[in-house]
Length: 126
Image (cartoon, rainbow, N blue to C red; front, top):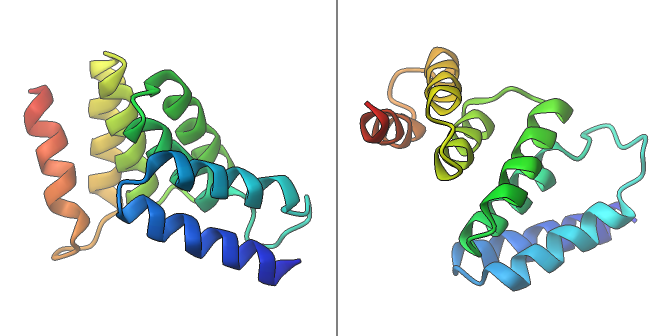
């Protein structure tokens, strides 16, 4: 089953990068549906990517719920926090978005690629 989850995850990521949001969403949902509850990695990354696909579809409230679930599942990494900030900003939760971006900023190492996205998100809200 792990191979199938990896296959769905990889195919979903490729579709996400191609902005094929609906197909990506279906693939992430399929992977989440068969993910065992005791999976050592957990659903965090799949939920995060699902949130990105939902945002691409303009389904911002659902994207926010997926991003919040990803954060709850862990880890509180800069990528998840930045995507959470994007989702919060999209639904007009400005202060919470700033807090998410600032937490992402506090967890990122100098020179990481995500820095530009964090600063862009913060600049748009300030």
